[in-house]
Length: 107
Picture (tube, rainbow, N blue to C red):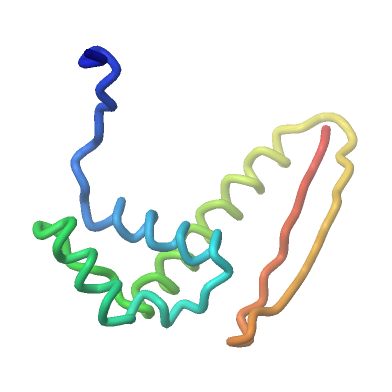
């Protein structure tokens, strides 16, 4: 009956919910204000009653903190290299004037 193929799900936490909402916003190229959409908020409340739905501001702050952490991790990785590095960069600005920089490096 396929019972052995049951997908195991982690318990939803507020941080995991922020991550999921951020991924939806990024993947759908949506504005951060989508997190405050009343229908979306109600859906999150129904699906995850033990977690508070994140606001637009909470999502933006979460993204900023993840970017800061990623930047520190990248600095650490690059500082430990003893070889040359090739970089490919791309920068863009959202409709809300948030600037992004995409970076790919090869060692």
